[in-house]
Amino acid sequence: MSRIRVALRVPVGLPLPDLASFVVRCEDAGLDGVGIHDHPSSGRDAYIALALAAQATQRLHLFPATSSPLVRHPLLLASLAHSLDEIAPGRAYLTVAPGFISTRSMGMQRAPVAVMRDAILTLRQLLAGESLEFGQTSTRLRNRSATPTPVYLLAAGPRMIELAGEVADGAFLMVGLHPLAVRAARHHLEIGAERSGRSLKDFPVVFVTTLGLGDANVGAHWVRSWFAPGQPFLNYPSVANLRWLKEAGFEIAESHDPAAIPEKQAHQIADAFGLFGPPERCAEQLLRAQEEAGVDHVFLFPAHDLAGGYALPEEPLQAFADAIRPRLGG
Image 1 (cartoon, helix red, strand yellow):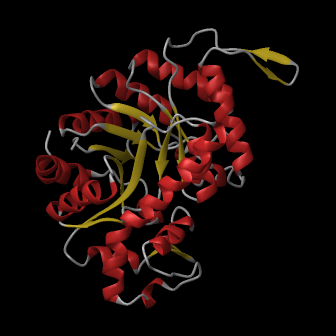
Image 2 (cartoon, helix red, strand yellow):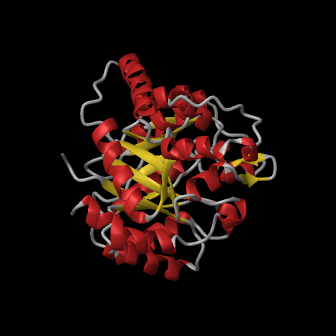
C-alpha cells in the first residue's frame, strides 16, 4: 500500500515573507503540499505568496486553495498557473472552485456548473497552447510549459463532482472519509468520465479533510458548534456535506440546530466527517480510511469558525511532524 500524501491548508494570515517562512517549515515537517487560500479581501495575494513559497522550497507541491474563475478571469488564472510552474517546475497546479468567501466579498454568487465547465475547458486549452476567442479577440499564452499545468476542481456536490470527472485534470473532493460516502463520490466521478469517454485511471483525487486536534471530545464539540451565526459547522463551506453524511447513515436537516445533536451521535458524525482527537488517533483514522476507502491523498483543512479562518495552523503542523507523519511512514 502506498504512502498517504498529505497537504495542508495555510491561510494568508501573516505578512507574505513570514508566510513563506512558515511554508518552509511545512516542507521541513514532511508535508507533501501546501494550499494557500485565495481571498483577495485579505489584502494579501495568494499567488505572490505561492511564488515566494516556491522560491524558498525544493519539494513541496503548491497550489491556490482555491481560485474562482469569476474573481480571476481564466486567462489571468492560466498565466498565473504557468508563472508558478516556471518558478517550481512540476510542483505547481491550479485548483479552481465555484467560490465562497472570494466571490461573496465581491458581491457575487458562487459559479454554477455551466460556468465552471466553460472555465475549466478554457483553462486547459490555454495551458495547452491553444488559441481561443474572447469576444472578437483571438488570444493564446505566448509562453507555456511543455507539460500543461494541471487544473483541479474542488467539488462538494454530486453535479460538481461529475464535472470534475468529465473535464478536470484532477479533483479535490469534500465528502468526508466514510467508506460509503467515498464510494458514492467516486461513482459520480465515473459518471462524469463516461460523458467525455475517458478513463479515470491515474486520475488524481485529493480528499479535503477537516482536522480538529484535541481530546476525545473535540469532534463532538465541533459537530455541535456554529461556524457563523445561522450557519452550523457541518454546513461549512457547503451544505453538500450533509449529502455525504447521509450516505454514511446520518440524516441531518440543512436547518438543524447543532446543539441538538446527541453527543454520542456527534462523535460518530465526527468520525465520518474528518479527523478529530489526539494526533495519534487522527493518524490511525487516516490509515483506516486508506484501507477501507482507498484514500491515499488528503488536504488537511484545520477546523475553525468564521473568526478563526486566518489563524496559522501551528498546532496541526507540529502534530503532523511529531506524530502523524511518523505513523504514516515516509
